[in-house]
Length: 181
Image 1 (cartoon, rainbow, N blue to C red):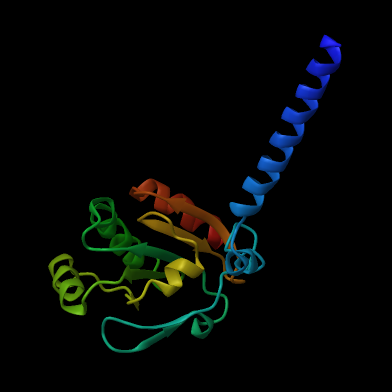
Image 2 (cartoon, rainbow, N blue to C red):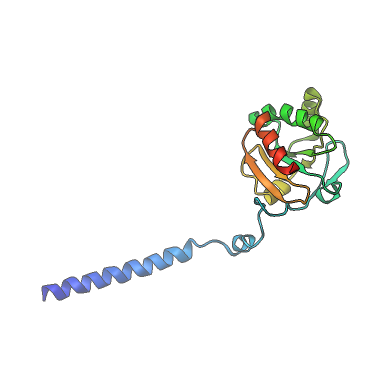
């Protein structure tokens, strides 16, 4: 009789855990709108870079699809308040001068006032293209979760390397060498 009671308690406990666990899984499931976002491709190595168009700091429009044919691209996401971003910008400027006509350097600013960015650009003497991602839509599309983040995109528009964090001139040169092959 005692073993029957123990068995009944075990079954009751098992069923309770099963029901509560199922309820917990159901209640904590991912919202439908987030689930559909998972079907959209996120940029990754070996896949095409998502197209975008943004207004640049100088008032022009930069469109990824308007790059000259067979032009590799270094696409950097940054902000003036980001210390590692500020530290790597001189290396990006040096690369833009060294690889002129071979590689396009583009540094997308993240949701800052144009006056703030312009002051910093003037201070450093930056001459490469700076699109303004005023609402972080492009950063979200590229799944940028930290800054700086850099994508090395080959002449066919395929991402060959992603780098999150500060680059030094050697890291930058290695990435550029990869997309020039």
